[in-house]
Image (cartoon, rainbow, N blue to C red):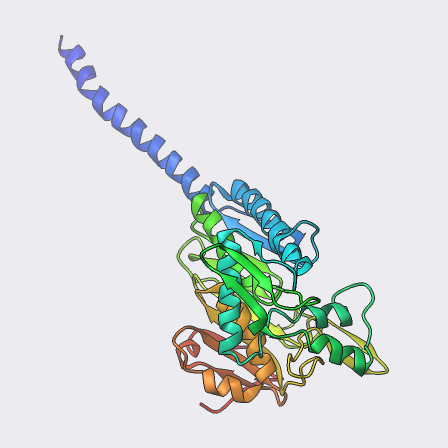
Length: 351
C-alpha cells in the first residue's frame, strides 16, 4: 500500500511536467509561426504589388489581397473594359452613370482634393495622359495644338455628382477620369481591410510608389522603410523611415518617363500647362494614415513645387519628406526623429 501511495503522488507531478513540456512545445511552434513570413510580387494596377506578411495566416492573406486588388482594378482602371471609370468616360457629356457607393465616395474625395490643391491634382487629366501615353507603349511629344485641345477638357469642376442617386457624370464630351494618382494609395487601405479580416498583425505592402505598414516587425521593432533616392535606380536609398500604420506615398520625375533628344518627359502633368510638371523638386513623400490623401498630395505638391511643400510642412493630416533640385531634404518636424538620412549626396535642409 505504501508503494502504491508513493506512485499515486508522483502522477500529478508527471502530468504537470508533461503538460509544461507540451505547452512549451506549442508555444515554440506558435512563436516561430508568428515570426515566419511569406512574400509575393504581382503585377496589378499597371505596377508591381509586393507583400511581406508575417504570422500563421500569411499565405491566405497574400492570396486574399491579390484577389481583392484584381477586383479593385476591374472597377477603377481607366484602361479596363467594363470598369465603372470607363463607363463614366464613355458617357461623358451624354448621361450620368450609377456607380458603387465606394466608387462615388472616392471620386467625390478626389474632386474635393482637386479643389483644395487649386487644380494641381486633377483626376480629369486623362485626356493629357492618354495623349502623351508616357506609361503606355507609344509615348510621344504631342504638338502644342494637340496639347491645347486636350488641356481644354481638363477641369475637375466638370465632375457632376448626384449623391442621392449615386451617379457621376462628366459635363463635356471627350472628358475622362484617371484615378491613377489617388487609387493606389486608396488601395492600400483596401488591402488593410483584408489584412484585418485575415487576422494579420504584421505586414509591409508596396503598390507602386505607395508603401503601407501593418503593426511592427515580429519582436516589436518598427519596420525600417527604405525611401528611394530620386534617381532612376530605385534600389538606391535616400534613407530609412519609421511610419507604423501609415501609407508612405512618393512622387517624382524619375519614376516613369521617356527621353527625346536628351530631354526627359515624365508622367506627372501640370494641369495648368498640359506638359510634364517643371518642378523644382526631385521627389515628394507624403506620410499619412489616409492612403488616398497621401497619394493625391504627393502628386499635387510635386506640381506645386518647393513653395507648396514649405506651406504644408506643419499640416496635421500628413507629414512631408521632400527633396529639392539642390539635394536638400525637407522634413516635417514630427518625423525628424523617425527618418535617418543615409545617402551622402543629399543633406537636411535647415530647420
